[in-house]
Image (tube, rainbow over the protein chains, first blue to last red):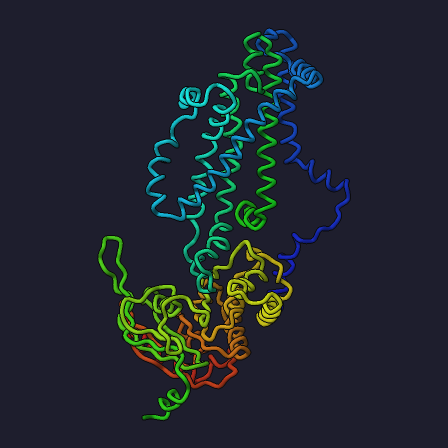
Length: 286
Length: 264
C-alpha cells in the first residue's frame, strides 16, 4: 500500500524537475497559445487605433501625435545621445536613493522587530511620517539640502524607506511562533533563530517591500525632476511640454514606462531566483 | 509491591513529573488552569501514550516536558535533572510538521546536528542514516511543499531523531493525516522505534492509536488536566494492524472508553 502511494507522489514531485529539451516549434506554439496571443495583441490594437485617429487629422499633432511620430522622435534622441544623458542622470539618483532606502530600511526594520525598546521609540515616529505625502516634504528638503542632487536623492529615499522598513517589521513579526519552537527544540539559540528561521521566513515579505519600492522610486524621481532639475527624464518631459514638443513628451513617457516595467520584471526575477520555495508554494497557486 | 511495579522500579526512570501545574493568564487577566497536578513516571525505552479530549492540557504537559512551555508549579525531571529549557536529550514532533519550507528534506534533517556543532562528516552520515530509516532516499533533495502530509511527518520524525535524543515527544503527530495514511504511519513509527530504541511520549485523542502503539496508556481528565488513570497494554510486539480486531484489543478499548466517558 505504502509503495503505491509513494510511487504516485514521486511522479508528481519529480515531474517539474525534469528539464527535457522541448522542440523550438512547440515552445513558440505554446507561447502563442490563445491566452498569450490576446495579451500580446491588445497593446498593438490600441496603438493602431491611436495612429489612425491621429493620422486622419481629427486632433492636432501638438495634442496627440501619432505613435509613428513619437517613435521617430525617440529614435532621434537615441541617436543624438540626449536620451542616454537624461536616463543616466535619472537612474543615478534612483539607484542611490533606492539603495540607501533598502539598506537603512531593512536594518532599522530588523532592529525594531528585535527590540521592544526601539519599537516603542520608532513606532510612533514611523506612524506619523509614513502617511505624509512625499511631495509635502519637498520644500523642506530643498531648504535643508539645497536644490542639488542631495534633496532629490533624499526624496527618493523617503518614498522607498517606509514600505521597506514596514515590510521588514511585518515579515519578522509574522513568523509562526511554532516554527520558532521547532527550532528551539532542535537546539537553536537566539542568534541561530534569527539567522536560520526568522530572516529566511520573513524574506518573502521583505522582498515584497523591496519590489513595491522600485515603482515608488520612479514615481518620486519623475516628480522631483519636474519641479527642479536641469537633467533627467522628468526634466526632459516637462521641458518638452513647455515648448509644445508633444512628441518628445510622449517619447519620454514611453521610456519611463519601459524602465518602470523592466525594474518590476527584474525585481520579480530576483524574487523567483532567491525564493523558489516560496514562489512555488504561495504564488504558484499550488 | 505487585510484580508490575517492581518491574518498573528495576528499569531506570527517565522522565519524572510530580504535581506539575500550568496556569495561563488569559486575555482579560483571568487565570486559566490548563494542567493541575500531573504525576507521571516514564521508564527508559517505554512507549507511553497520553490520551485525552482536545483542550485537556495534554499538549501543554508535553510542551513542558520539551522545555518549550514553563511550568507554574511542581517538579519535572529528565534523568534526574530539572527541565529548564529545550534539551538535546528530547526531540519533539509537532502535529503541524513545522518543517522549514526553505530547506530541502536533507537540510531539514541536518539542521539539528548542524546547530549543535556536530562535525560535517558525522552530520552527513547521520542524515543519510535517518533519511534511509524513514524511507525518503528518493526525496532527499525535495522541498517540503513537494511532499505529501505523511512524507512531511516522516521528515519531521527524522529531523527530531537526527539529534539522537533519548526521549521522543510526539504531539498528536498523525492528527492532520487522513485515516489510511495515519494507519500506515503508525506501523512506520513502531518500526522506526524498534530500530532506534528511545523513550516515546505520545499525545493522542484516538483510543485505538493509543492501544496499538503504547506499552502504557495514561488517561487525562478535562481541563484542568490531571491523570485519571493508567492502563498497561500487554500485547505482543512487533504489532500489526490485525491486532486491532482481537478480543484482547477490544477489551482494552472498552476499558479505556469507560475511563474517558466517565470523565465527560
